[in-house]
Image (tube, rainbow, N blue to C red):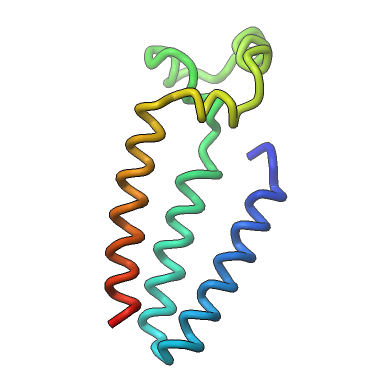
Amino acid sequence: MANDAALRTSLLWLAAVILMVGLFTHSPKKMVATYVLGALGIGALLLPDWDYFDRDYSRWPYPVTADERASLLSHGSAFTRFASSPLRLIAYGAIYGYALHKWWEYVSK
């Protein structure tokens, strides 16, 4: 991961959300559910090497060469490449929207 600050910030926000869930619900089970959902969400968004996955599918079994890395970096930042893929944004929006909806139903009971 190129930006460790984003991971640290996300984990701090997750800790704050877990604390708030604990204070308002007094339920360790709901705190654990919040931790698991948040950790999986953060891991799925921030940990993958997007430069690696932005290559052709046939090249995934092989390491990234210096030429591939240079060509990927010349296209702009990883965030702009991530944001320019509407199918990826739709899929993440649907998956995370559903997960947050189910989490909210569970926590708000």
